[in-house]
Structures are given as structure tokens and as C-alpha cells.
Image (cartoon, rainbow, N blue to C red; front, side):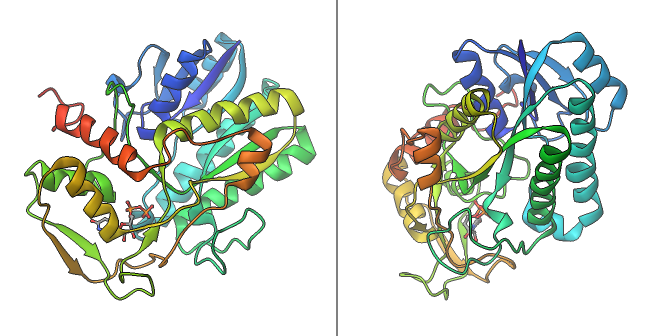
Length: 329
Ligand code: UDP
């Protein structure tokens, strides 16, 4: 039996593929390589294509005995989603609809879904629990929430069981340095700060210095990408064991300000990393911290790399060794 991982050439997807291969699972990857990198897939069977290609999906489900799907393939930038809501609904919601149609047709009952803290919007209380209200502030968050709801209704109608994993801020890289983060253009904080350390940017902008936080910059809960990868495996094990739909937050339960992240990057890299406070980025809540108690309790998930220092060190090892990412250096 094989596991289909959609979006397996992306950042979190590729680390999850690696984790599943290490567990001895047979993995099939489907990725359109718009954002992903084929070099990031270390050993799985690879199909280049999109969720919208129904003929390809049919071929894939008919050819392989797929017993579960881990679903990453999506557009995933908050700011871009505000500019291009139609594209986000098409790629995320309609794409997932096509995938689920094939799953139902081929009697595949289990899916682990890459969801997000953006489903909550501006939180009412910290730390955020799965039972807190969901009120997304972007099309990105809305599409992820719509997909969670699609799964809920498909459970009642077709017995499709899902685990939706709401990630907080994914960061870090494979501790052995084989794969890492490579977005073009880069928009995430830690890789941007490390690009300053590499001399690829002059300074990092701190988006907002007047938030109601301890130093005025935004607080986020950074979680190691390999810990996220493991959570997908544990979620699949739980689906196989209990056959029950569930939603879990994934974070360390600890927040760091943007300024603290930059300071940690300075100490890990030994570079001065100039920073400039600039305007707030629209749509950024002041503080996002997860309560991951449910995942701890029900999945038995405990992050192996909870320290920000280790997260940054693994990211730095990758960026220093591969300053141009997957592009041949
Ligand atoms: N951020 C920043 N400068 C940057 C990029 C990000 O100050 O160049 C801040 C951003 O406002 C947020 C935090 O860093 O508070 C994490 O942002 P990122 O884009 O990495 O992840 P997000 O929180 O949007 O998922």
C-alpha cells in the first residue's frame, strides 16, 4: 500500500516525504513544481502534475494501491491571497474537491491535511485552542477553513476520515542538511534574516514596532519542520488505529518576537544582521501562540526540537551550504 503526498516537493511536504520514507512507507508524490523542487524529493515515486488534471489523478489512483493521502498542494501566501482570491479558491478549494472526488471513487478513506493557524484570524485569547472561534482574515485562511469543512461533510456522507493539522510558524530544515527551505521570492522571516547574514540583503525589515507585545514586534510560535513532518506520520497512525476525524494545532506553545528571532539569528550565525523597523504588514495579528495540548495527548506528539536556537541552527546550516537553494551553485 502506498501513501500519496500532494505538494511533496514543497518545503513542509518534502520534509514529510523524507520522514515517511525513513519509516519504511511507500510514497507517491504529486507536485506541479510551480513552487516546489524536484531535488527535494529524496526517493519517492514522482508525478509532475496538478490536482486539476483529472486524467492524471485517475491514472495515479488506478495504478497504485493508495491507502491514504497527505495533502499539502496549495497556494499558501496570505498577502498574495488578498490580491488573488479567485486563484486561491481555484487552487485550494476546487483542487481539493477534485482530489477528494477521486478518493471517494477509489474508496480511499484517510487524509491528513495541511491546515493553518490562519483559520483563526485575530485570536480572542492566547494560547489558541482548537475549539476557539475561526474567523480568517484572508482568502488563504478562508480556503483552508472551507476545506476543513468539506472534510467534515464528507465524513458524514462517505465515511472519509481526516486529520487537519493547523500549523503555526514552520521553520528550520532537515537536521542532516539534505533538504531545506527555498522560496522565490522569499517572504518568511527566518530565511530572510539568514539571507541578510549571507550578504544577499542589506537589512531585514521588522514589520511593525508598535504592537502590544514585550518589545513592540509581533510574537509567533515557531515550530521545527521535522516536528511537523512527524506529526503527519502520527496523525496517519491515529487514523489507521481509530478511524476518527480530528483537528489539531501544531506549535511549541512558546512565542518569540521578531526582534528575538533576529537576535537568535545573530548569535547562531555570528553576523551583525542590520534590522530596520518599518510599517506593519496588513493582516498580521500581534500574537499567535498555539496550545498543542490535544496533539500532545491524542497523537503522542512531542516536538524534538523545541528550542528556537536549534530551529535557526538547522536553517542556517542549510542556507550556508546552499546559498542559492536548490539551484545549482
Ligand atoms: N516579518 C518581518 N519581516 C519580514 C518577514 C516577516 O517582520 O521580512 C514578521 C511578520 O510580520 C510576522 C513574523 O515575522 O510577524 C512571521 O512572518 P512570516 O511571514 O515568516 O510568517 P507568518 O506569520 O506570516 O505565517
